[in-house]
Length: 331
Image (cartoon, rainbow, N blue to C red; front, side, top):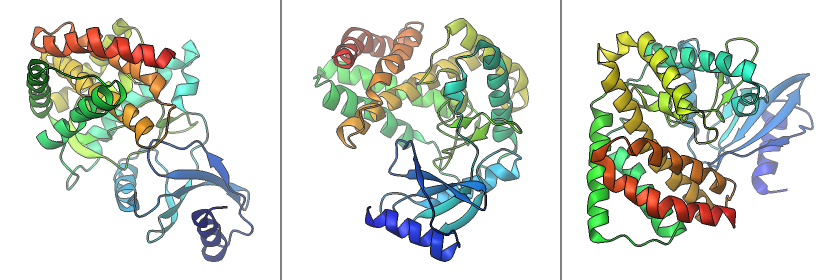
């Protein structure tokens, strides 16, 4: 047993009175956090282990309170030891949206719930004092694509003209993001962070990186999910449904402008995500996300084809990046 695991057991037993806690590991996420399930007095809880030298529990607690105040279903903090990086949370169950989306009858209902919860999150949740999704952060994220996917993972060298063209595309994408209404943004609102629950569906996880940012960000995270893809026509239908319901947020912006924001925000996010998947493998030794890179890049190719302003990006991903990523994934 590791030193931290022993510390965690000691905290549960000595501080919280859980006798001989039996910790069952839950699949780890993309961060340095680890999660366990533990039973105490016949009640199931989730234990978060967030090493304080790598993770900060304070934002998780802060954002959880904001979302709870909006009436959304997130884990409640039962106990905490911030110095050691331990939290005891209520348990929202074990069925992720991702595993439930294989039954057609449930898909529309689950997405309807998720879209309704998103609207509540954007309208009712306090975003004051949250970090801003500003120009620097947007570009820092897109640079993950250049540095980790193109450079590190694919070992591709870009010509000076390609780099210049790519930077121009990045500027266009960030300008589009910053021109949108700015709201509470979860930042990872997708099928691996939403739980199927019997009441007040969905349960919402992994919200500690929330910021104030573009209104379409969480929508595109949900509908153009890096872990499951839907036909573009169906995604457009869900997007247009959201558009009709969100007029009080969108300030009478046209549907065409909204769909352009949605498309370009998705490209920005998928640039970021593909870079993160490569970084998780090369820096953190997590290979499980490599299989998701082609799907993520496919979104960029499909959507950028509709916008001549993004021709440099489209050509690069379609002709060089995606083919090599597919080849590496199939090996």
